[in-house]
Image (tube, rainbow, N blue to C red):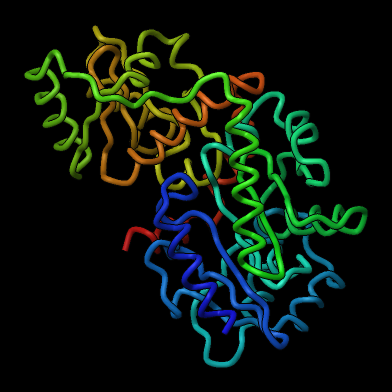
Length: 354
C-alpha cells in the first residue's frame, strides 16, 4: 500500500538530521482521489498513521477558483477554513500549511525536506544561478510568503514547466515522483551534486571549554532567567563565528521559517566583557521575546531549551555551505516579521512543544 511505504520513508528521512530537524519537512501520497498529507506539528522521525490527514483532492482543486482577501491574516484564515472543509469525515488533525502544494504537484508521492546542504544553495546570494547550472530542469522559487501564496506561485510555474524538483529560496526543496525509489534517487543526486561544489564543509569538532567556572555560572543564570534547561556547546565552527561581530554576521539572522519557529528569529551575540543577563533583558525589551540562542564571545553558545541548539547548528552549517555560492542570504525583514506573527507557525510551534 502506498501510504504504508510513505510512513516508512517519512520516518527514515526524519531520523536523518542531514535531511530534516525536529518537526520540519512534510510528505504526502495520493490514492484514489485522496491526499494523505502530514499534519502540522508532527515530527517525521516518529510519525505514525495518526500524523497524517486524509483530504479530498477534488474539493481541494476548487480552491483555485475562489477569491480571497488581500489582507495576509484574513486571507490565510479563509484558506485554512476551506482546507479544513476538504478533510475527509472523521479527520480532526490540521493539515500541513503546505498541503495545497502537495495536492497540486502531479506526482503520486511528494517529499519536502530542509537539508542544510540544500539550504546552502537556497539561502545563498548566488543560489538561483547555482541551481540553474547544476539542475537543468529544476524550478527555482524566489522568496515568497508560505501557504496559499507559495502554492499559487508554484502552480503558475508548473503550468510553464513540469518538474519533479523545486527549490524554494530560504526554505528547502520539494521532490515529486511516481515511486519513492525515484524520489530517493533524485535526493541522492541533488546532495551529491551540491557536495561536489563545496569549497569547505563545517567542522563541528568539539573544543575544550577554557573558562569552565564562567560557563557554569552563565548557564545557571540563564536557566534562572529563562525558567528552562540550558544547554551549552563549544566547537571549532562556534569559535570561528563568535570571534567578533563581523565573524558572527553569517549566522546573525534567520535562514528559514524552521529556524524562526525553533531557534528564534535571531540569536543574541554578547561581547565577552558584556553582562549576559543585561544583554538578554535588552533583547527582550527590544523584540518582545526572550532570545532562544545566546552566543557569548570566546565562551560558548547557550541554548535556552533543548530545541534551539540543533537549529543553530543547522544555521552554522548552512552559513558554511553558502560560502561556496556567494555567501549567506537571510530572509528579509518583512518575511521574518510575517513568519513571527503568522498564526500557522505559532500553531506549529505550540503542537511541537507538547
